[in-house]
Amino acid sequence: MSRSSIRRPFIAGNWKMHGSQATNAALLAGLKAGLPNLPKGEAGDDAAEIAVFAPYPYLDQVSRLAAGSRLAWGAQDVSRHAVGAYTGEVAASMLRDFGCRYALVGHSERRSLHGESDALVAEKFSALETVGIVPALCLGETLAERQAGDTLKVVFRQLDAVLAVCGAPALLAYEPVWAIGTGLTATPEEAQAVHLALRAHVAARDAAAAERLRIVYGGSVKAGNAAALFAMPDIDGALVGGAALDADEFLAICRAINV
Ligand code: PGA
Image 1: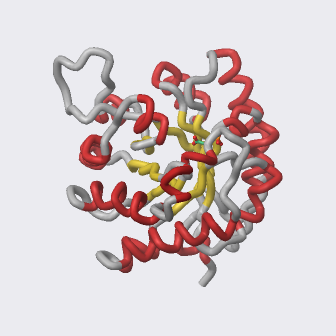
Image 2 (image 1 turned 90 degrees about the horizontal axis):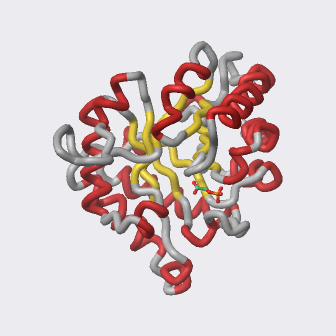
């Protein structure tokens, strides 16, 4: 059985705080035009799932423009609260209300710039699961942590915080902090080692869930380095930042998936 028949590859663009109605429309039009040319799976179906994570105000625009295409979409964050006096927050039920299927939680920019703790990330994860949205749990070590030999200790701690309160995740994004937006990428072997360790960590609790778990890599993924990353057996796709803002570059990354 091929890997793609167990775990459908997932390639997503994290738009971060970029975009306007005009640039989003142009980017989505470019993506939709290129989607039919992406590789097919063994059964002739769409091999990879392609998604974009857009800023909140544009989710409705993205949902309308993606409708009827194979493009999935999601939010970049969520409140840990279900409802109430939380000015500026967006509840998981609100995302669900208009069909959101995915949301990022624990992106390193949320952890470092907004002080999000492992416990808060776990609460957000749980809020999403409660309403049926698939959380894409982001985890990764800083350069200092890697140099200290603490990479696995850090990502296991981040994962264990979620495992303590929720079931096994379905989607992880391993994003070494030192590789995000820097042009530095983990080598395919470095990324593979962490992905394999994460899968084994989940397998210790739930072997079947670990087999199905999609673990995507993020951190300066580009058309030029994507194929080598995707060739690794435990790298099931990518979470792409900067290169996802250019339709041709993002489509080239999608074409690099070897299913
Ligand atoms: P990058 O961002 O591809 O620009 O490094 C990835 C991410 O932060 O998700």
